[in-house]
Image (cartoon, rainbow, N blue to C red):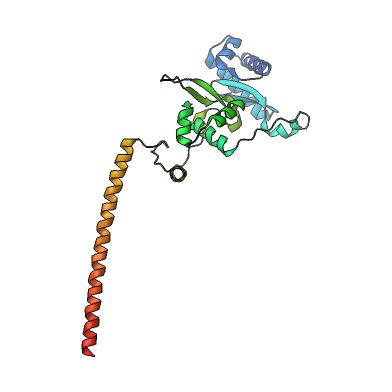
Amino acid sequence: MRVEDLREQESVVEAVLFTMGQSVEIRQLAAALESTEKEAAAAAERLRERYDEEDSGMQILRLEDSYQMSTRTKFYSNLIKVAATPKKQVLTDVVMETLAIIAYKQPVTKADIEKIRGVKSDHAVNRLIEYNLVYEAGRMDAPGRPALFATTEEFLRRVGVSSTVELPEMNLEQREEIKSEVEEELNLKLNGDGLPMSDEELAALAEVEAEANSDNVTDDLSEIDYTKEEQELKIKQEEERHEMQ
């Protein structure tokens, strides 16, 4: 394809993204270009790279299977000087904790969130929906048809990633530390997935701990026997010393 044709594709994508204002799916860009989705994605990527190279005030974001034009974050402070001050969204520790659970476990039901947190989470989930960070992604095929919650494109924009697969992984030390804190706070045991252990898992854990305790008791008795023999020897030595005197 000629350079002029490639540049025209970029211009079409630019016009669509600017006009729509919100994210546009690749299939929609393909329809606008009358091309394949692969060609549309390539055109959007070229446009994104050009904006980055020019350090433009605007940027092209890749959000899952969509693209969006937005202001480059480093210019937000300049925009605030001429725009109305936006309402500040304060995420409390409770809301942040709930958001983290949804981000890493999605799609997840409210019941599963509450099982992990150990407390009701209606208010936190509703607040996240209000902030457009979480949405109802469907219904579980189970009794009661509970709602499933997942993160939105706004969440990806706020976090600065293109997909949830880019979210940072928690290292093992952090995982074990948090797991211990939760177990202590809720007085329950968690499995490797961070969920409360089932009866079968608890039974297996109890058996392992019982064996460990048994070994410790044996070691303790050996130490007690040794100490007792040592004491008897000292008593005998003391009696002999008195007889000699």
